[in-house]
Length: 161
Image (cartoon, rainbow, N blue to C red; front, side, top):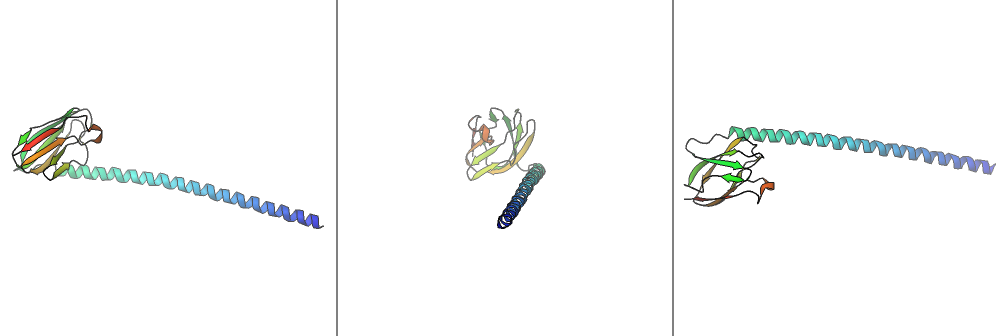
């Protein structure tokens, strides 16, 4: 009788352990499903935020694209090999009218004399943007600020008097 009771208790214990393991596995599986859904939703929300932020910034850039009436206008042409623009200018309010005539996206940056400015987003081919700055006398460097183009495209040394 003791043997039968022992076997019954042993089987009951084994059954309980099997049920507990099955429940744990179900909880683990459910946790993994919830985690996967959370990751997917986070990715979707992040992509939406990035897209809408980029659209907003581009709209702001477009609105402030018009140069002041008293700014000197300087044409800058971006190509897949670099940029063309004057190498010397007078000091003062200057609006760089930057056109991308290349086949890739490009950006325009000007650095020097406490000035370090570029567009927030690159300029698509066949498009243009305007950047207004107040140039002080000194030396500047203008170049495409797209990281992949560094050291592949010509830079312009600009002298301002």
